[in-house]
Each structure stands twice: as C-alpha cells, then as structure tokens.
View: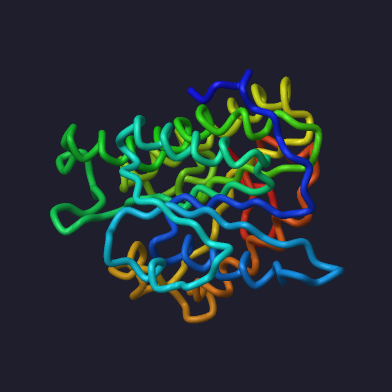
Length: 263
C-alpha cells in the first residue's frame, strides 16, 4: 500500500482524473470527454490531468496525443502493478478528483456467460471475480491516500443491473451476475471506510445501460435500437449522474438516468 505518511499534496487548481480500463469502449470515451472538459490556459475552466490504464498494447487509447494524458499498461490481476501505478500518481503530489473503474469481462474468445449450472467451471468463475470485483477493491486500497483530503472526490465503478440481486428475475450468467453483485458490496464497504478518513469522498456503483462495445456485441440482437447506447452517449449520461452526486449518495448503486437500483 502507498506510504500515507509521505503524502504531502500540492494545492493546485486542476482536475485530476484516473480512468482504469481506458483502452477502448466506455473507459476510452471517459478519457476523451474528461480531456474535452478541461481547456488549458483558460480563466473559467480548470486544467485537467488524465491518468489512464490499459491492458492491450494495440489499444486506441495510445493513439491520443495530448500532453494532459499519461497512461500505463496494467494487468488488473497483478496487485504489484496496481500498487506501482498508484505510487506514481501519489508521487505527483496532487489528490485525485475522479477515479472511474471501467474494467470488466463478460465473455472471452474461450468462453461465454453460463446459461445454467451445468456450464459452471471454477476457473471461469474466478476470472470473473478477479477482474470484475477484486481489481476494483485493490485499486481502492492503493489509491486511498489520494482521497485523504476534505474536497469532493469521486470513486465510481462501472457495475451492471444484472448484478442486482433484487432485480434478478431471469437467472443465468452466474459468474458475471455474482461478480457484479460482489462489486456492489465492495463499493458499499469502501464507501464506509473512505468516509472515516476522506469526508469529501463519494463512492458509487453505476449501471451504464447496454452500450455498443465489444463486451455487449454478441448479445445485442434483442436490444431495441433506442436502448443500445453509443459509448459517447453512455459516458455523457454517466457524467451527468456523477456531477449530481452528493455525499449522502456515497455507497449507493445508480442507473444511467440517476435512479437508484436495488441491491
């Protein structure tokens, strides 16, 4: 974990953002829209520094040429890599205003979400949890020093409505549903601990809606066109939700339209 006693933050008029899982899709669009928000040298808008992580070396993120963007390759299953990047950000000497955890897996080239119990296997289940939930908790662990200030700051995790236990009427997708439900519980736990040392922190889980990305692509056939969002629309809607968040909302689970979702 980062050395909290060594952190001495600089006071700067700058928005500092970390997008975890920014290689493509929703994470990449968050990078683009945060960069669009900050206009260097203007009087009315604070400058923006965006940090981003990615996994694949050929991702579109690396095509963005902007001095306000700094990115690192991180394997979300390796805590040492998470800790190393978190320490690099701590060493910059400024707290984080936004962290968005966009990493997630629903299917791979080797397996699909399970339709019934007979499709379960332990390795696939473990991979779901490692990526969809454990990774977020490890980032929260190592980034905690960057939240130890009184100012408003966001730690948001992209969850999924299918991770809602109360909303589950169809079953199936065992590993994905369970790992997103676990993510939601971790978000609640993190919010409670952060509140003790970072009164300005707001920790939430967000459902983005069905977005036209690689993750949802095999399952879009029965999605009405008006309910299949572009990444640009999804991120715009989620930023509207984030901008309205208040301290009392910390630890909650919200839909893309700001409505609370059941656990």
